[in-house]
Amino acid sequence: MKTIFLHGLGQTAHDWQAVIQRISLSDIDCLELFSLPEGNISYSEILTKLEERYEREDEPFRLCGLSLGALLALDYAICHGDKVDSLVLIGAQYKIPTRMIDFQNFIFRCMPEKTFKNMGMPKKDTIQLSHSMRTLDFSSRLMDVTCPAVIICGEKDRANLKASKQLAELLPQAELHIVPGAGHEINKESPEAIAAVL
Image 1 (cartoon, one colour):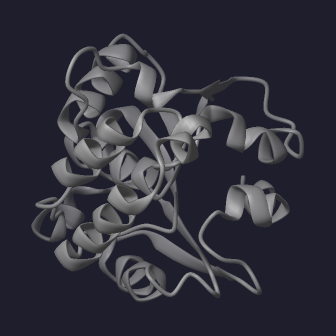
Image 2 (cartoon, one colour):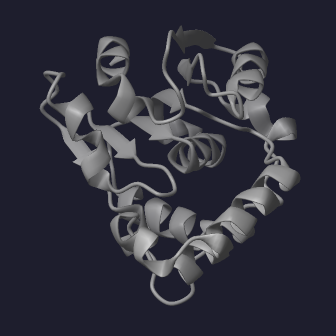
Protein backbone atom coordinates (compact mmCIF):
# COMPACT_ATOMS: atom_id res chain seq x y z
CA MET A 1 0.00 0.00 0.00
CA LYS A 2 1.25 3.47 -0.90
CA THR A 3 1.86 5.98 1.90
CA ILE A 4 1.67 9.64 0.90
CA PHE A 5 3.33 12.27 3.08
CA LEU A 6 2.00 15.84 3.06
CA HIS A 7 4.11 18.50 4.79
CA GLY A 8 3.02 21.63 6.61
CA LEU A 9 3.20 25.33 5.83
CA GLY A 10 6.78 26.46 6.35
CA GLN A 11 8.08 22.98 5.54
CA THR A 12 9.18 21.03 2.48
CA ALA A 13 9.07 17.35 1.59
CA HIS A 14 12.59 17.04 3.01
CA ASP A 15 11.16 17.51 6.52
CA TRP A 16 9.75 13.95 6.35
CA GLN A 17 13.18 12.33 5.89
CA ALA A 18 13.71 11.57 9.61
CA VAL A 19 10.40 9.69 9.63
CA ILE A 20 11.02 7.87 6.34
CA GLN A 21 14.44 6.68 7.54
CA ARG A 22 12.77 4.98 10.50
CA ILE A 23 10.11 3.01 8.61
CA SER A 24 10.32 -0.04 6.39
CA LEU A 25 7.66 0.87 3.84
CA SER A 26 8.53 0.41 0.18
CA ASP A 27 5.85 2.45 -1.59
CA ILE A 28 6.24 6.07 -0.46
CA ASP A 29 5.30 9.34 -2.13
CA CYS A 30 6.59 12.51 -0.47
CA LEU A 31 5.22 15.58 -2.23
CA GLU A 32 6.51 19.12 -2.55
CA LEU A 33 3.10 20.69 -2.10
CA PHE A 34 4.09 24.19 -3.15
CA SER A 35 5.42 23.04 -6.50
CA LEU A 36 2.06 21.51 -7.46
CA PRO A 37 -0.01 24.60 -8.38
CA GLU A 38 0.82 27.00 -11.15
CA GLY A 39 0.10 30.71 -10.88
CA ASN A 40 -1.57 32.09 -7.76
CA ILE A 41 -1.06 29.64 -4.92
CA SER A 42 -4.06 28.79 -2.76
CA TYR A 43 -5.35 25.93 -0.64
CA SER A 44 -7.96 24.97 -3.27
CA GLU A 45 -5.31 24.93 -6.02
CA ILE A 46 -3.08 22.60 -4.01
CA LEU A 47 -6.03 20.30 -3.25
CA THR A 48 -7.03 20.23 -6.94
CA LYS A 49 -3.50 19.27 -8.02
CA LEU A 50 -3.44 16.58 -5.30
CA GLU A 51 -6.71 15.16 -6.63
CA GLU A 52 -5.41 15.19 -10.20
CA ARG A 53 -2.18 13.46 -9.19
CA TYR A 54 -3.95 10.50 -7.57
CA GLU A 55 -7.11 10.20 -9.65
CA ARG A 56 -5.75 7.13 -11.49
CA GLU A 57 -4.59 5.23 -8.38
CA ASP A 58 -6.29 1.83 -8.38
CA GLU A 59 -5.45 0.77 -4.82
CA PRO A 60 -6.44 2.71 -1.67
CA PHE A 61 -3.53 4.53 -0.02
CA ARG A 62 -2.63 5.98 3.36
CA LEU A 63 -2.36 9.75 3.81
CA CYS A 64 -0.03 11.12 6.47
CA GLY A 65 -0.16 14.89 6.87
CA LEU A 66 1.08 17.54 9.29
CA SER A 67 -0.78 20.83 9.83
CA LEU A 68 -1.59 22.07 6.28
CA GLY A 69 -0.87 18.52 5.11
CA ALA A 70 -3.34 17.18 7.67
CA LEU A 71 -6.02 19.58 6.41
CA LEU A 72 -5.42 18.39 2.85
CA ALA A 73 -5.48 14.73 3.91
CA LEU A 74 -8.74 15.18 5.83
CA ASP A 75 -10.35 17.13 2.98
CA TYR A 76 -9.23 14.50 0.47
CA ALA A 77 -10.66 11.68 2.62
CA ILE A 78 -13.99 13.51 2.90
CA CYS A 79 -14.24 13.93 -0.88
CA HIS A 80 -12.59 10.67 -2.01
CA GLY A 81 -13.15 8.19 0.80
CA ASP A 82 -12.99 5.19 -1.54
CA LYS A 83 -9.34 6.02 -2.33
CA VAL A 84 -8.14 6.41 1.27
CA ASP A 85 -7.28 3.33 3.33
CA SER A 86 -6.30 5.24 6.47
CA LEU A 87 -5.25 8.64 7.79
CA VAL A 88 -2.47 9.86 10.06
CA LEU A 89 -3.24 13.47 10.99
CA ILE A 90 -0.59 15.41 12.91
CA GLY A 91 -1.16 18.79 14.57
CA ALA A 92 -4.53 18.87 12.86
CA GLN A 93 -7.38 21.35 12.81
CA TYR A 94 -10.79 20.63 11.29
CA LYS A 95 -12.14 24.18 11.59
CA ILE A 96 -9.61 26.93 11.03
CA PRO A 97 -9.46 29.46 13.87
CA THR A 98 -9.61 32.73 11.91
CA ARG A 99 -7.83 34.73 14.61
CA MET A 100 -4.93 32.28 14.60
CA ILE A 101 -4.53 32.58 10.80
CA ASP A 102 -4.72 36.38 10.98
CA PHE A 103 -2.13 36.49 13.76
CA GLN A 104 0.11 34.08 11.85
CA ASN A 105 -0.10 36.29 8.76
CA PHE A 106 0.72 39.36 10.85
CA ILE A 107 3.87 37.57 12.05
CA PHE A 108 4.70 36.54 8.47
CA ARG A 109 4.41 40.17 7.30
CA CYS A 110 6.88 41.25 10.00
CA MET A 111 9.43 38.60 9.05
CA PRO A 112 12.18 39.43 6.51
CA GLU A 113 11.95 37.87 3.03
CA LYS A 114 15.16 35.86 3.56
CA THR A 115 13.48 33.92 6.40
CA PHE A 116 11.20 32.27 3.83
CA LYS A 117 14.07 30.92 1.75
CA ASN A 118 13.94 27.46 3.37
CA MET A 119 10.16 27.38 3.71
CA GLY A 120 9.41 26.23 0.18
CA MET A 121 7.97 29.48 -1.20
CA PRO A 122 8.33 33.26 -1.04
CA LYS A 123 6.82 35.44 1.68
CA LYS A 124 4.00 36.79 -0.54
CA ASP A 125 2.90 33.27 -1.54
CA THR A 126 3.07 32.03 2.06
CA ILE A 127 0.77 34.82 3.22
CA GLN A 128 -1.56 34.27 0.26
CA LEU A 129 -1.81 30.52 0.92
CA SER A 130 -2.39 31.04 4.62
CA HIS A 131 -5.14 33.60 3.90
CA SER A 132 -6.86 31.17 1.49
CA MET A 133 -7.38 28.73 4.39
CA ARG A 134 -9.29 31.18 6.64
CA THR A 135 -12.76 29.76 5.92
CA LEU A 136 -11.99 26.03 6.03
CA ASP A 137 -14.47 24.15 8.22
CA PHE A 138 -15.00 20.39 7.90
CA SER A 139 -17.23 20.09 10.99
CA SER A 140 -20.35 19.02 9.10
CA ARG A 141 -18.50 16.46 6.93
CA LEU A 142 -16.40 14.56 9.47
CA MET A 143 -18.89 11.69 9.56
CA ASP A 144 -18.10 11.14 5.86
CA VAL A 145 -14.62 9.92 6.84
CA THR A 146 -15.12 6.16 7.10
CA CYS A 147 -11.50 4.99 7.19
CA PRO A 148 -9.44 4.50 10.37
CA ALA A 149 -7.56 7.61 11.51
CA VAL A 150 -4.75 8.20 13.96
CA ILE A 151 -4.58 11.72 15.37
CA ILE A 152 -1.13 12.70 16.66
CA CYS A 153 -0.37 15.90 18.54
CA GLY A 154 2.59 17.15 20.53
CA GLU A 155 1.98 17.72 24.21
CA LYS A 156 3.35 21.27 23.79
CA ASP A 157 1.40 22.06 20.60
CA ARG A 158 -1.04 24.34 22.39
CA ALA A 159 -2.47 25.78 19.18
CA ASN A 160 -3.67 22.34 18.00
CA LEU A 161 -4.01 20.12 21.08
CA LYS A 162 -7.66 20.93 21.81
CA ALA A 163 -8.70 20.53 18.16
CA SER A 164 -6.80 17.22 17.92
CA LYS A 165 -8.63 15.84 20.95
CA GLN A 166 -11.98 16.99 19.51
CA LEU A 167 -11.15 15.53 16.10
CA ALA A 168 -10.36 12.15 17.68
CA GLU A 169 -13.82 12.17 19.25
CA LEU A 170 -15.65 13.36 16.13
CA LEU A 171 -14.17 11.02 13.53
CA PRO A 172 -15.95 7.64 13.51
CA GLN A 173 -12.79 5.47 13.65
CA ALA A 174 -10.10 7.57 15.32
CA GLU A 175 -7.52 7.11 18.03
CA LEU A 176 -5.46 9.85 19.65
CA HIS A 177 -1.72 9.83 20.41
CA ILE A 178 -0.26 12.67 22.47
CA VAL A 179 3.53 12.81 22.11
CA PRO A 180 5.18 13.83 25.41
CA GLY A 181 7.51 16.81 25.22
CA ALA A 182 6.86 17.45 21.51
CA GLY A 183 5.65 20.66 19.89
CA HIS A 184 4.03 21.15 16.50
CA GLU A 185 6.64 19.83 14.05
CA ILE A 186 6.66 16.24 15.28
CA ASN A 187 8.12 14.99 11.99
CA LYS A 188 11.32 16.83 12.97
CA GLU A 189 11.13 16.79 16.78
CA SER A 190 9.91 13.22 17.42
CA PRO A 191 10.00 11.30 14.11
CA GLU A 192 10.13 7.99 16.00
CA ALA A 193 6.59 8.64 17.33
CA ILE A 194 5.19 8.90 13.79
CA ALA A 195 7.28 5.95 12.60
CA ALA A 196 5.86 3.80 15.42
CA VAL A 197 2.29 4.58 14.28
CA LEU A 198 3.10 3.90 10.63
